Amino acid sequence: MTNEGKRNQSRVEFDNTYFAVDDDIENLITTNFGLKGEKLEKHRDYLKRKTPLLERLSQTLFIHLKMANGLYPTSKEQLDERLMHQKYAAGACYGIATLYERIFHHIGVSADKHTDEIKHIQKEINSIKAWRESDKKRFKF
Image (cartoon, rainbow, N blue to C red; front, side):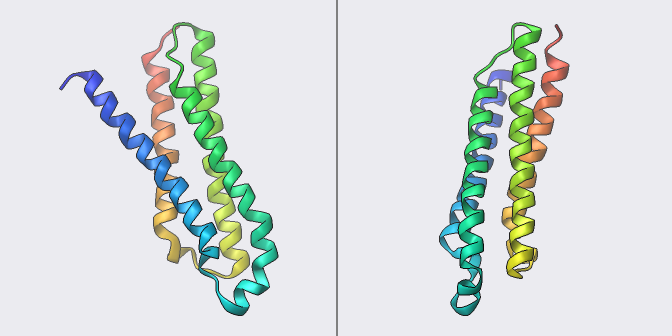
């Protein structure tokens, strides 16, 4: 397998991780974070305020991943721009993870019930970090 083939497979895995994060957010929102009845009514206003933030962070993550991936650096400036987009994508991931924590705490739901969502966002963070480190080593300007 050529290096190009490996990059394509890696890219597919990377995209699949983003889509898992986005699907998780959509599922949490549409299921009201698993709340029903009185507990849902008690926290409805809170969730209405917080869910648009999750959606915005997911969109921000997607935009910066695509912007970074669309740049193949041929200069130090382009590498810096790519690294900046990677940094903003990682920041969006940290924002999602933090918002998950805040929401779960506020509504009284154990994070243990949402291990897949937490694993997906952590995998995305780790993938972005590895990508950044790889770029720093690969592109020498």
